[in-house]
Amino acid sequence: MNLPLFIARRIYSDQGDKRKVSRPAIRIATVGVAIGLMVMIVTVCVVLGFKHTIRDKVAGFGGHIQVQNLMRYNEIDPYTICADDSMMQVFGQQQGVRHVQRYTITQGLLKTDDDFLGVMFKGVGQEFDKRFLQQNIVDGEIPAFSDSTSRYQLLMSKMIADKLHLAVGDKVYAYFMGEEDVKTRRYTVAGIYQTNMTRFDENLCFTDLYAANRLNGWDEGHCTGIEVAVDNLDRLDVTAEAFVDHVNRTDDGHGNQMITQTIYELYPNIFTWLELLDINVWIILVLMVFVAGFTMISGLLIIILERTQMIGILKALGTRNKTVRHVFLWFSVFIIGKGMLWGNILGIGIVLLQQHTGLVRLDPQVYYVSQAPMELNIPLILLLNVATLLICVFVLIAPSYLVSRIQPAKSMRYE
Image (cartoon, rainbow, N blue to C red; front, side, top):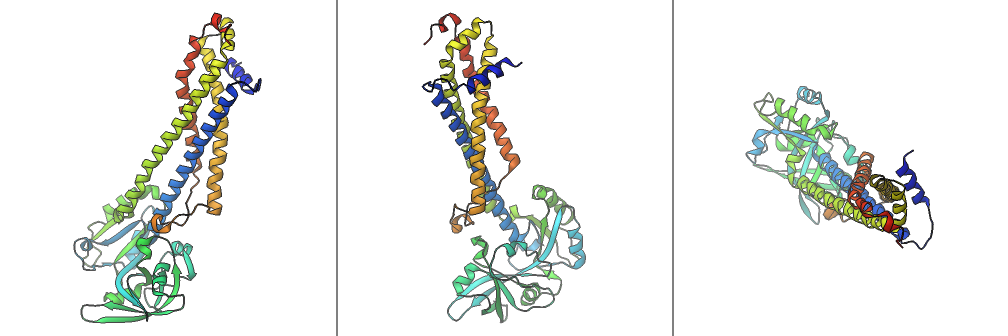
């Protein structure tokens, strides 16, 4: 029989005199652990949800890896690469690659009877992955993009549509400034999307790859670059390294040298900002563990003082100090366990409530999302539980040595 565990269980289950000081102390310690763990769970889930939501939005606009002409990083002129079917097939067969697609960028001006706006047109072909934009469509539909013909349909953001007072089905003229002339095209608004990523929503429209190439005066098969989506973001660095080894500074068959960049290199400001959130998480975790540990230390000291007579009797019967200390450490584990149970219930409950109702709203102009995103990560929550239990028990080891200073003869007369 485990004597310390047996005695600790009997003490914990003994309700005894309701006027005992230890009863409120136990409740306060339990509440402290519960609140600390609840805040840690909610904080970690919010930061994970926020980081992954923003990361997925950025990747939705440009893939995880981009392949472009090396000269684009040295000069302003729109240099191209030749992305024929064989190259696309080779890229698509690389290990860790989920999808590849071509794109062409051109600048233009949208004009209505009352207003005008300079925007960036992104031409995409039939292989364009629509899943991201499909999740963010607020009106209309995503047109069937093509690299061989164009119906001059436009997919624009709600921000652009609101500025120009356009709706699905409306006609709008687009003007493109060339070196010698101005080209005019008449587009139909086929769909409107809203991602709340101001950096992209305020100036990006989608059209056919064929139309964008014609406007730039490029031959068939040429494009601004290739977007690569990986199947495992945790191994993005490995896949990117493979592209660097096989693609960087290689020839596309038409004398153009290529270079690759990941989304972390293309948008360093966004991801540096997201990395700063990790500092806030660690600060909150440390503070909450400190709160839980402090309340447990206070509760344990009160319990030991209240049980002085019991400690004296156990020592008089020959119980060693180590055994008595283990009794109170087991007793603390029961308190911590109950607090962790309520902390998990409250923390996971808040996360699920936010996921299903979106009660907590945010300013999308500042946070890029309209509601607080929360991602329920069970392995990480289990790790938080284990860490909380171990740290709380560890900080109680030193206070538990108080029992060694209690002498049986004096404790018999202790009131």
